[in-house]
Length: 104
Picture 1 (cartoon, rainbow, N blue to C red):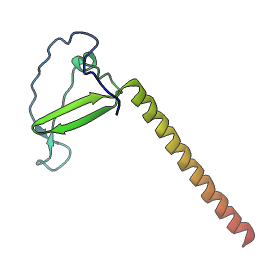
Picture 2 (picture 1 turned 90 degrees about the vertical axis):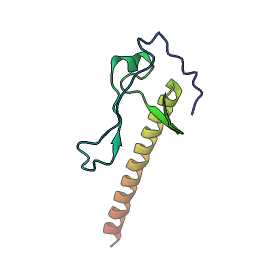
Picture 3 (picture 1 turned 60 degrees about the horizontal axis):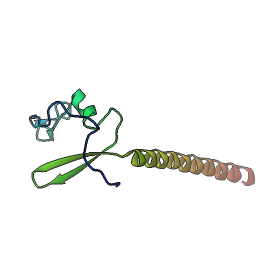
Picture 4 (picture 1 turned 120 degrees about the vertical axis):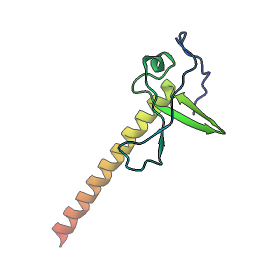
């Protein structure tokens, strides 16, 4: 993961916020904790819609780290390469099936 300096580009309206740990209402299992955070302040803090986020779990603390531009580019490139690999494997399987049909 790339280095982050954890400094937002502008001043965030309110640097500390509170929320309550709830449960997953549609998950069926009420013992599964869930934390929801939302608000325009997320974008101010560097978490625009579509931003990849890494989550670090420390003792009694969760740290959210937005992906850098380079990480976003690399993750997108990795996804494209994985898709190409799947397509090539599918084409390979089709070619093998066709060869078996022709030679059989």
